[in-house]
Image (cartoon, rainbow, N blue to C red; front, side, top):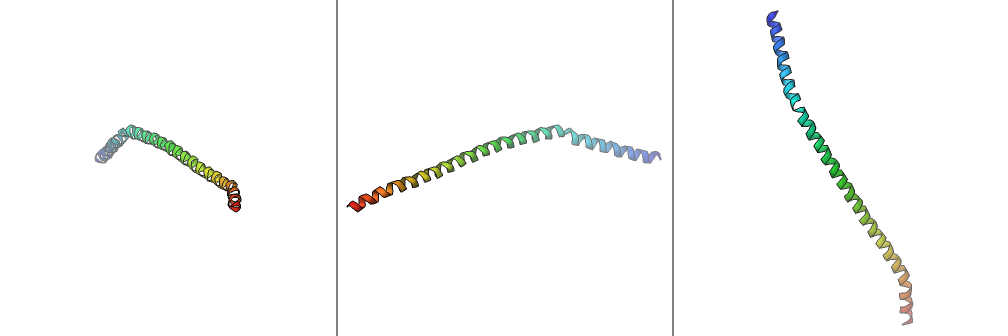
Length: 86
């Protein structure tokens, strides 16, 4: 019986040592995780800003395109009148 209790106690000591080693790294791992999350949030904000800038550029391109079409619509009749007079 004493031998079995010694074996069980040794197992518990080994488990405690392993658990202690594992948990001793936990604060460092948590800090690394927080830093990585912070970096990801920063990168996400940068990507959101780039997407917003890209959307604004696309909007300006479409606005310029619409304005050019309207300019051509209004300028075309005058050109055709001048061409008919010649």
